[in-house]
Length: 473
Image (tube, rainbow, N blue to C red; front, side, top):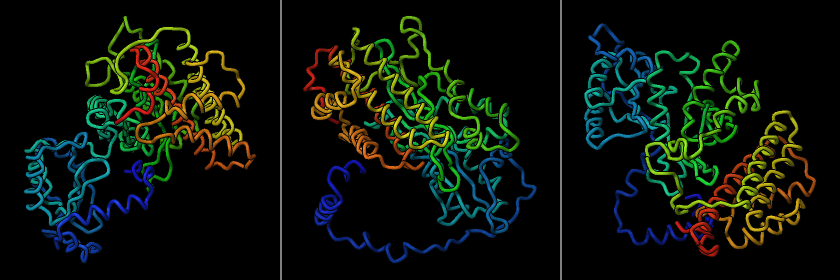
C-alpha cells in the first residue's frame, strides 16, 4: 500500500477510494459500529479468583511461566495462546471461539508477535483453560521469549520476498526450543524477528536480533543470505532501531544466533541489557565474531548452502531465471560491491564514534562505490572519478530503469542522488541524519547486489538488457 500511495499520490489514491465506494450498495452495517468504536469498557465473564489447588495437566507449569501474566485487577490474568509462526487452522480458530465463550467476554486480542491473547481470565480457570487449548494443539509455552520467533510470509506467498523468512524462523524455533531448558535467563527474554526482504513486515528493525533476506552471488551462484540487525528496542514503543552488522548465508544463521547469544552470556556485565551490550562492545567486535560464518563451501563440495530453508531447489529469484555467468567483468563488479559494504561498515563505526559528519560522507561514498561496481559490468575501465561514476550510473542504470525496483521504482537510486546534494551543500549533519544516510546506503547497496545478479543471470541466459529493465510484478 505504501508503494501505491507513493506512486499515485494521496489525492489520486483518495479519489480512487471514493470512486470505489460509489459502486458499493448502501448498507447500514458499514457505519452502524462507528457510534461505539471509541468505547473502552471491558467486562469479565466470571469473578476473579486466585489460582488454587486444582489439578494441573502435564506442561501447565512451563506454560504458566511464559504465557500468563497477572492483570492489575485482583484474580484476573491475561493468557497468551502461542501460534508457532502465527499459524492456526480454521478448526483451531473455531475451537478458540468456543473457548472464549467459556472463559472470557469479548476480550480476545491478536498480538504483534502473531499470537492470541485472552484477557480477563479468572486465574482459577487457568488449569481448565490450558487443558482446552492443549486439546486443540495450541498449548505450546515460550510466548514472548527467544523461542517465539516472529516472521513475515517471505517467499512462501509474498512477491517481495527474497529469502525464506518462515523457513528460517521454523528452524530457529526448533533449535531454540530444544535448548530452552538450558538457555540463560538473559537470553530467554530476547526477541528474534525475521523479514524476507528489507521491508519490515517481520519487525526485524525492532528486534534484539533481527534478520532480513537478501541475495548474494558467490562464485557465479546465487546464495540466500540474511542481513544481521542487532540491538533494536522492542520495549518502550520501539524506541530504538537495530543496526546492520553484516550479511550471513541463510544456512548459517542458526550458528550466528548461537554465537551471538553465547557471547552475550559470557561478556555481558551484571544485569546488562542486550541493547546496552551491543552498544558497549561495538559493531566491529560482533562483526569479527561472525566473520567465519560468512564463508561457505564451494558449490561442488556442499550444495546445501545454495538452497533456502524448506526448499530443496537451488536458490534463485523468481524473476531472474537460472544460469551462471563466468568472466572477469563479473569478478571486478563483485569485488567493488564487496568494497562498498566494507566502506559502509566504516561509516557505522564512525557513527558509533560520535562523528556523524564523517559517517555521512563515508555512507555516501559507499553508495558511489556500489554504483561503480554496477558500471564496471558494462564499462570495466570506469575511473575513480565520482562525477564520471554518477554520470554513467545515471545513463546506464537509472534512466534505463535497470536499477529499478518493481515496487519502489527508482527510490533507492534517489537515495544516492539526494545524499550527493546534501553532502555537496556542506550542511551540518547531526546524529539522526547520519543514521538515516547509513540506513539508506545499506538499502542502496542491497539493491545494487540484486540489480547485478539480475543482469548477470539475464545476460547469461541471452536476455536483452531492454527486457531486464524494470522487471514486472
